[in-house]
Image 1 (tube, rainbow, N blue to C red):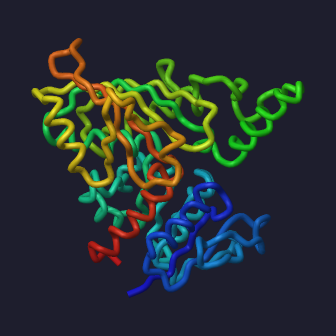
Image 2 (spheres, rainbow, N blue to C red):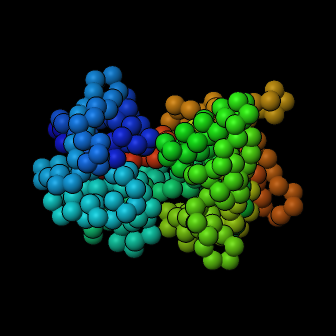
Length: 338
């Protein structure tokens, strides 16, 4: 059986990656439709090795007969159009932040909480979690199954592609300008991003946190376990693609380093590369284009009774966004929801 798929936000960084992944994974699509804003209508976008698609305008687009809508057009656009698509019988998989904490919308990482998929019937919408949350809960899930997690302290090192194509352009153009002795004032970022790190992502929320940090707290609790306490610090770094995280975990129950390593190695979607004697660890530049979440620097934390620390990286445009969305669509097919 094959399905009609609309990729909404097809001209953006995540939309482009969705189209590539649909092709790479040979998703059973009878028709793939590229959809974006009216100003992009008529443009052509790549559909992997299958050629190009002509972009159709979202304004007035008829979702009747479309089985799956993979949305990444921005939260305000999803807020308007995702319910329209759902009312027309299209199952929406939304990459934006708009519906993640809606109690009637499941927030899904297929390897972690596939049991939540069936709740899409409430609204016809499934939310894709934040990129930094996805890779962290992927690494936490097998550990939580062995020894219940009590608390997580995480520092993220997030690439500029998490802010979209304009953020990537600013890193490129402003880095080039420095070498030409023509420093430019930041437009997308609050501070200069070339050769710098910025401990702020998104807007301020309560208690001195920024919204990216709040997302990691509430999304981890919704996906994995509401009792887990999360203390994040989210940092933007001058890297184009690939997020990294330094994660410290405190458990309720004992867990040995060997048990943790075995659990991670056996978990689908996790690759453990961790030999400190030979400097074996994965950096963001090495994860670009890959599907996995890579775990390195796994070690015990002697400062708490049951503690571990590790380093994890992942391609934020892939597992952190586009791949997870396509995997949700694949799970809907495999579980017979379509």
